[in-house]
Length: 127
Image (tube, rainbow, N blue to C red):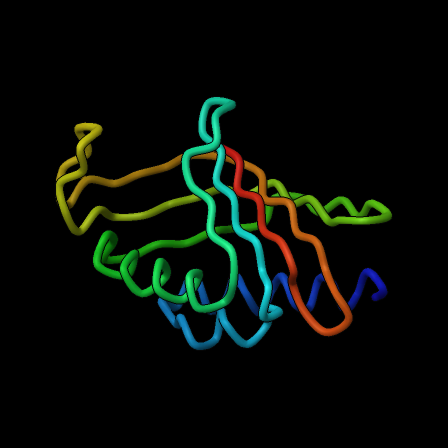
């Protein structure tokens, strides 16, 4: 898959994410997609398969009243594409870590995408 196609898939995924459009997110994922989240160097979450990913994505809709990931940079490597992102959201619930409903959340991170024949096969979010 060429870099332009990879960027098209990433842009489609992020646009759907930002629009709270879970079905749109699913359209660019391959069936056996792997998702991993790392925070402060530790794996905090992992999912395997489109069905598990969709379930988590639907559940997460209730966590934020608005959210947006903005690409700051893109680096294409042979086996993967890394993007630096700026993340912004408004919490829709109180979180165990002390974030309160209505509070603005801002952070920066990195997402690493891997690709198969037609779609995204792995997403690793790092914050």
